[in-house]
Amino acid sequence: MDNRQTKTDVILIGAGIMSATLGSLLKELVPDWKITVFERRAGAGEESSNEWNNAGTGHSSLCELNYTAEQPGGAIDISKAIKVNEEYQYSKQFWSYLVDSKRISHPRDFIVPVPHMSFVQGAQDVNFLKRRFEALSKNPLFQGMEFSDDPGQLTKWMPLMMKGRTLNQPVAATKIDSGTDVNFGALTRIMFDHLKSKNVDIKFNHQVDDIKRTGDGSWELKVRDVDSSAVTRHSAKFVFIGGGGGSLHLLQKSGIPEGRGIGGFPVSGLFMVCRKPEIVAQHQAKVYGKAAVGAPPMSVPHLDTRFIDKKESLFFGPFAGFSPKFLKFGSMFDLITSVKPNNLVTMLAAGAKNFQLTKYLIEQVMLSKEKRMEALREFVPNAKIEDWDLVVAGQRVQIIKDTAAGKGTLQFGTEVINAADGSIAALLGASPGASTAVSVMLEVIQKCFPQHLQTWEPKIKEMIPSYGLSLLDKPELIHQIQTSTARSLRLTDEEWEHGQKTTVSIS
Image (cartoon, rainbow, N blue to C red):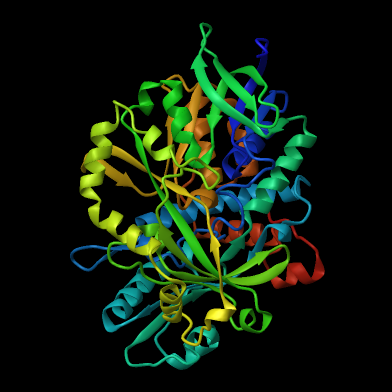
C-alpha cells in the first residue's frame, strides 16, 4: 500500500453525466482548481449514462404523462411538468454555451430533434389527455403542442403505430416538434475529453473503497487500481459522489449524519430494440403511453426513435425487473450490504408498503419474449418477434427514506444529499436524472459553495441566461432561449442544412 497522500481541490467519484457536468461547470467557474476523477470502469459513461442503458429522452415533460397528475377534482396539476421543463432548458443552455465557446465541436454527435408524443386509448384516457393538453398548451413552455383524436391524423403522425390497429375504442395523441433524443453516453465522453484537455486528472479502472474525514476537515479516499490491486490515498476539500447506484454505499461510508436512515431499492430494465431500416423509417418520434396500474413511474411504456453511433433504431420499453445489484456491473450483495442499523426500520417499512411493487417486478422478470411482444403490440400492432431484440438497460436505485408521508417512503426522482458544511455531496435517485443534470449540479454548487456564489453568479448567468429566473411569466425570454439553443445545438433543419449559426442575444 502506498501511504503517500495525493492532495487535490475537488474529487469526483464516477465518470457519468453528473460528474462530467459538475466538472465542466467548476472548470469554467474556477479554471485553476485541481480536479481528480475516479471511475471503476475502463471509460466514461459506461453505467447509467450509457446510451444503451437509458431511453435518451431529453425529459422536458412534453410527452411524459406521469409528470402531469390528475387531481381528485379532475384538474390537471402541471407544476412538476413546468419544473422539469425549466430544468431541461438549463441543460440546453449550458450545452449551447459549450458549443458556442468551442468546448463541443459537433452537437449532432449527442443531440438530435425528435418529435415528442403522448398516446392513449380508451374514452377515460382520451379525456385525460385532452384536459392535459388544454392545461399545458396555455403555458409558453409548451407552445406548439397539438392534440388529435382523429385516426386519420394519427396515421400521419405515427404510421407504424396505427398500421393494423383495430379501432374498437377511442384513441388520441399529442405532438410537439421541439422534443429531442440525447445520447448521454456520447455527451459524457465529449465532456470528459474536454476536461482531460484542461488538465483534469481522470483515473479509469480505479475503485473508491473507503472515504473518511481527516483532522483538517478534508476527505481522504482509499482508492484501488482495479488492474493491479495497488491502493493509493487521495484527499480533497470537496468530494462529489456521482457513482449512480454505487453512490449510496459511499455516502454511508462517509458517515455524515445527513446520510443516515436512507436506503435504496434497485430496479432493473430491459428494452426491445429494432434495427431494421424499413421498420425504423416508419416511426419518427418518442411516443409515451400510460404506466400500468402498480408499475413504477420509470416503467411508463414508450416507443422511441434513437440515434446511436449515427444509426437510427427503435426502442420499446422499458420492462422492469429486479436484481439486487445497484449497478449494471455491480455485486449481487449490493442490496443486502446497504442495509445498516440506521436504515433497517426504514427498509423494512418500505418492504411492507411496496408489496404490490415487488410483486409487479417479479412478474416482469418472469415475462417471456412473447409476453413482451404482446405489450409491444399495444404500440405496434403488426410487430413480429424476429424483428426485435432484447437489450438489458442500466440499473436504477430508488431512494427510500422517512418523510411526512411515513416511514420507508419510496422516492421517485433525484436528490442531492450533502454535509452541512458543504464539503461532500452525493447524488441519489433516477429519472429525470441526466436530462436535468445541469440544474442538479447547480444545486450542488449552491449548497456546497455558498461562499463563492456572489462571485460566480455573473459567469453562471453567462452560461445559463435563465439561471435564477422563473420562466413562467417571461414568454419573450422563453422564445429567445428556445430559438438560441435550437440554433446553437443545430436542432433546426435550416441550421443543420447550412451549418451556420446566428447568435441570439438573451438579456
